Length: 419
Image 1 (tube, rainbow, N blue to C red):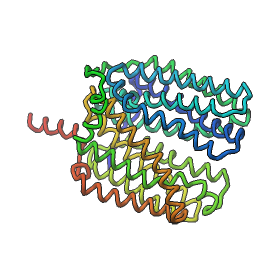
Image 2: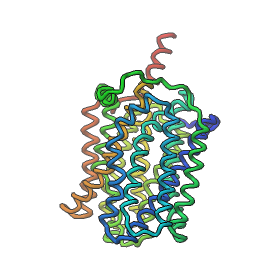
Image 3: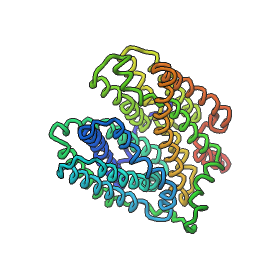
Image 4: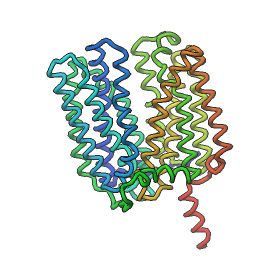
């Protein structure tokens, strides 16, 4: 069991990290609120389920198109400036959505155009945001910063949809006004953030340099194993996409129950990330990571096999916690093992894997549900996740048998040699 660290919140004494964290909280809350309002508003206008699918596609398509070039830009420009400009672009999107609702138009294509702009901003912000955290705190505080950063994100993911839904009772206009105000505050807080000087890449802007992140990941079995494990585990275990059907047809609960089911994974992840701030993982790192993924798979099987609402909520809570352990270890590995000059491009590759696993995982769950039936598809996904976990432990023994994080092991070896 990780040792207790009473200084779990001490990382907040670093003003720049606290400013960044506050900006991230405000921005994520705003975006989550907007997503609720957009979905309700578009469906109210068209009554077309296909349009709800287009909401996700409009954001994901530009993200996939721009994410790798965005990684190179994150290595060639100041990452704080990139994040601040991208949040400013998201604020512009919020104001455009507000103008759209005030106009009273019944045509929804402007919404998809606005969401494409939002997806583009997210593509450029993601690698810069992931790569800058390590420059905001001392090296010995980075693991605590990762845990608090993750918990803040999940708290926003939990609260944002709830706030958006409550405010929507007063109309979509109210949601977009409040979310735009939060984004404006996020912009101010991000411009107040001062990161340590980063290593600026001097490579020419060529396609070869854009792909440097992929070459680096391929050359590091630990990083490749960690990223690809998450990709295939979530790809097969994406049962959350089937929650509406599980709620209605298996658990026999209404929209309120579905809301609790959707909240449970985020709540489990948030609680786990808070615990990691006080009990950071320092030993048996590989075992913790594979254990987190395995618990995710086991809980997915339980979710598919149960008809009890309480058991399903508990399974989803533990799924979120297991996933958080895997995310925590993977993020530390990627950031610690990557030179600062290419950290943006490697973070972009990581974002591609995560985005693909989430989007394709939902698609895979829908396809297998059509083939095998609802509960069998969920159980199949959990078993497939466990199979992937077993295979990766054999194919990447350097990862599964890892005791300390590599940077910590090198430091320990240096101290031992000096003694």
